[in-house]
Amino acid sequence: MLKRYILGLATLVMFFLMTPIASADKPHYTITTDATYAPFTFQDKNNRYVGIEQDMMKAIAEREGFTYTMKPMSFNSAAQLVSNGQADGIIAGMSITPERRQVYDFSTPYYKTGVAWIVKKGSKIKSLADLKGQTVALKTGTAASEYGLSLQKKYGFQVKYFNDTDTMYNDVAVGNSAATFEDMPVIQYAIKNGMALKVMNPDQPGNAGSYGFAVEKGKNKALLAAFNRGFAAIKKDGTYDKIVAKYLGARQATFSGTKSDNSTVLGILRTNKTALLNGLWQTIVLTVIAIIFASIWGILLGIMGVSQFSWVRGIATTIIYIFRGLPLMVLAFFIYIGLPGLTGVKIPAFTAGIITLILNEGAYTGAFVRGGFEAVNRGQMEAARSLGLSYSQAMRRVIMPQGLRIMVPSFINQFIITLKDTSILSAIGLLELTQTGSLIVARNSQGFRVWAIIGVMYLILITLLTWFSRWVEKRMTVK
Ligand code: ASN
Image (tube, rainbow, N blue to C red):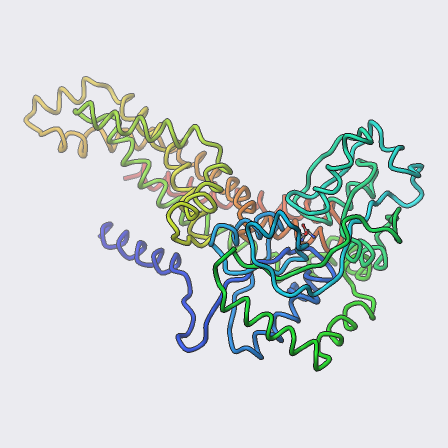
């Protein structure tokens, strides 16, 4: 009965882990983008990704007859996925620079840019020299951050890093950082939409250049050619100009435009209902699959850990040592970004996230399961064996039932930790609850309210999970 249940579950999970494969007739690509880079890519009030780049890509794909899956995430991850061959192309306000040309092939330039240096509105800072000893906010992996860094020695400021532009702006707006560097069109759009910041070099952008669509160097030639052809066509027939005018002409509700909806917790809940529910669902799915498989894997490791054979015990100890020792985020990056670079096999973020959780939580589970079995009196094993039971019979009938029972509180604890650990997977772009929160804050700058909502949602989930575990525990002990 149990076997059939597990088998059914495993099939379901396999189904979940498979990547959707595109229809055979049209080429299908995976394109990454910067999730919070208005006016080029950002979420609108209905949590749909919009912006100049999103409209461009749609128009180009239609003309050129290809389909694509758009993956919004931090710029740094978006760029790495393409340079590693995990994704086919990137359209993310990406400046064409000589260093990047060594790693990527770029399309025809599609938008002019240059770096601005930015302070809070009303700030006392008047020149770069005033930044001495101050902190400057930079965004990881960007051309603007490189530019900022090139001035660091001369002007003697400290730097701190952020993964997205809006959090970085906020840090300056609330006065934590004295200044920041970001691309001119991006900051100008934010200021136009109510960000209380000021550009100090509006007429002299640093490192003037252009944005380009990029693919990994030497790869995806057909996609790049299609982009260039499509771009030339939408430029020629006026579609491109219309797209740009659509976003730059009208005031967009990205930063302050949705004030009334964001002034109360209820308003935020209502505006972001779909996004929050999707994030919640993703967190639940990750947690449930990870809990089930990490428990199975952990119990297996625990049994191996008390094996009669020292080499089996050795294997268990080594596995537990490695995966308990690695920080979860390092493991996630290794599996998602590191491994595919080596093997050339793409791993979807969801699968990478699940594998990360199973390995990490499974190691912790393995450690306490092993401890639990060891705690069941050794004498009991001897007694069972002297009654004529084989080692595995003694294990299954005598040691395991008692051991598992004392482990129940540890299991519940581990389940809660697993749920909380799913939030770390936002780093590889999974749109779970935490990442959803980041994106909402990026849009409405309501850090306090949004993070309070997300916090309460986690607490509710944890309470439900604890109740459920206690219920199972009771049923186990009644038997
Ligand atoms: N403009 C940045 C760069 O070129 C990319 C970004 O932040 N989306 O590095």
